[in-house]
Length: 363
Ligand SMILES: Cc1cc2nc3c(=O)[nH]c(=O)nc-3n(C[C@H](O)[C@H](O)[C@H](O)COP(=O)(O)OP(=O)(O)OC[C@H]3O[C@@H](n4cnc5c(N)ncnc54)[C@H](O)[C@@H]3O)c2cc1C
Image (cartoon, rainbow, N blue to C red; front, side, top):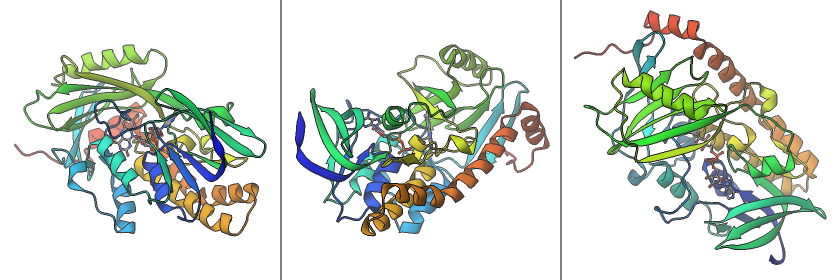
């Protein structure tokens, strides 16, 4: 079913940190529709698998807008250091960190609540197809079992790692991808903690363990081949180091991107723009994605607000967005270099062995 003849200026697909920020910062005079899988129904809604840690860069982004975080987004406890474990060498070090520990789903819903009222926000809908047709984009989505189609002049793919928009419009584009798997357990550890785990034999990325309210989450990012087996093996390994991982109450899995070169970042083309992880904006060294989603969405909003007012062509808008995201891509390139050092077993061993920047624990 077609939703009538009206044509939106912009359709935003995905309201995670990138999509909600883009919608919040766009000129309210634009005709914008936002579509997202999530619903307010906590039990049945789609929930993004995530660690839910708000890093310093993301906090700074909020600070720059004078935005404060509501208490109900936070969970217990707030942790001041990360226990870093290298499974192969058996080395353990503690490093100070300034993350905020959050409920990811509540965080997403809160970000969505900041979108101005003039925009049409469609929750609990799944986009199934996007295509170019007669100078506009046709977006097909399913709501309550019924398929509908809307039209928009421009498209913003903010639909995360497995972006339907990217796969549909740029099917040949490749970004290094891992499979993230995490399980939730009733927490049985003596004290809450946050841990970062490296095991070069099982993944060239990393794994994490984290207390969240009464639960302990253990997860990791693995090469896509044999990811499940690698995860199970890693669980066996970390049990030796005191991780209590029996009887998971929930298991989640999704793709997570980790760009290996700056050329893997894709900002869009032909009227379709990407922001956040859909573009490949995520730190390959920490898999921190919120601040990258915020920053890229903010830049995109500025380009669209100015450019549409000036009547720029799609090509000129893309050029501007590409150029304005250069500093972001440069910063990401530095993170790629950092990831090479961090994920090299020898470099990591030397850094951890030296104890540099670590916190000495006092009992
Ligand atoms: C296991 C794991 C743990 C992580 N932990 C952290 C962390 O602690 N801190 C951090 O900063 N980053 C973390 N990240 C990275 C972070 O989650 C992402 O980089 C960030 O969420 C990207 O934001 P985004 O808005 O670009 O995309 P997303 O947050 O993925 O949002 C995309 C949204 O699009 C919607 N969507 C997708 N497809 C469709 C569709 N077809 N139809 C309708 N809606 C759709 C979904 O509802 C989704 O919410 C983690 C990632 C993983 C996988």
